[in-house]
Length: 297
Image (cartoon, rainbow, N blue to C red; front, side, top):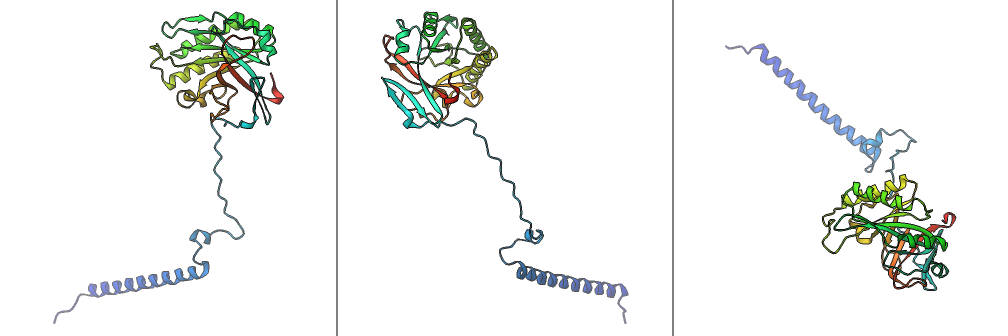
């Protein structure tokens, strides 16, 4: 007769005990789960079980994102015409009437312009040749600037840029600063870069470089103590210039319409290039400059 080894009997006992323990654990888990459901209800999570009584869960609110550019808030009903000149009055803003001129306006009687109701003038200092790249003074810069000042108009200036690099833009700004150093300006010194519709040295200009040129020009102007600005139309404002990088400067928008529809805030609006003003022969660009009532120039 063969006897079974004692080791096998002990192994069998251990297996039986482990099986019994596993059954007890499963049963305990089921009973505990039922108790929790009965206690919390179907809409309560396990996390709420550990939440101290009378203590509300605080969820941090996301920080409000600041608008990268201020929005256009003009009241369309605030625009009106008086003696053929468009103006604005809405909220805490007042719109002053202005013109911008260059050598295309040869015969200007600035006293008559002032009497007609024009408050300010933006005058072209000069330009960079779109093929030669040379800097040239506008033939009527001095006559226009001094005539407008003597008639009592507030004045600003602009430069027609064809800069290809920030270094060229700085050169243009320094050229302007030298020309205006003996005059008192109440309006900004503006960077005016426009696409040429003929073969030009600037044909391959891109958004990044154009913005860098505008910024270099404006930084140079403001370092000299003047207010700087950038002139653009809607196409350039939306697609060619990074206005967020230029938001610290005056925005001068060209949009020929009844009211400005551009999405972002502007400080000067050129609303037509076919204006008629007593004292100026032929058509002239017309503008409105927006000022707070408590900060009139």
